[in-house]
Length: 211
Image 1: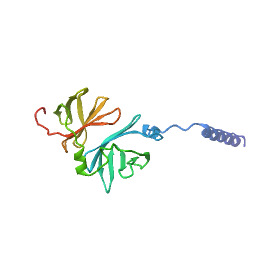
Image 2: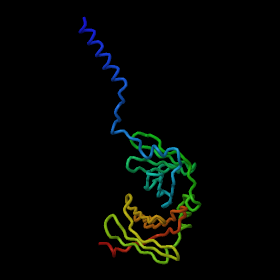
Image 3: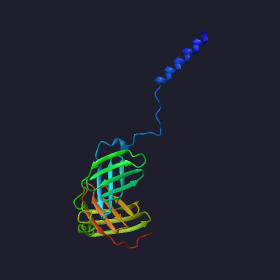
């Protein structure tokens, strides 16, 4: 009888201990920078590449997304990269960023495009195309890399452009961002401080310089 009582007491003690022991964290579950940033509106840049494509860059703390939005139906655009999907309704200006795997919503906000980007007609797109800087040089140094140098007045950029997706190459020096859409033969240069588009022009690539 005594042994049964001792066994019962031991089991009760083990059960109590099990209830107060903290559960170990699952190493596969973590709070991502995206989830931490949901309460804020991320910094967003968009540059139209004709009526059916928009280069988009979204940043917020450690969160970074850059890709080409492709027109779906009507005036809606979508891009997916590394498990993140961006949906953009150009009519309403709403941007939604979600997990492509789980559908979890990370961002949901409104974006106002620069006036030079808002018209999606091809003819209007050509209307605001500007010429290149007084000095512009793009040299292909590898399959996924270009060397770029541009200057005009006080503006100067010199640095590499790396393949982003498809035939789009992007580079930045912290002040300016250069995007070269090789498929559409277009170069776009943006001031990173205010998002202002400085240059947007057609570039005819020469093969020399490719190693």
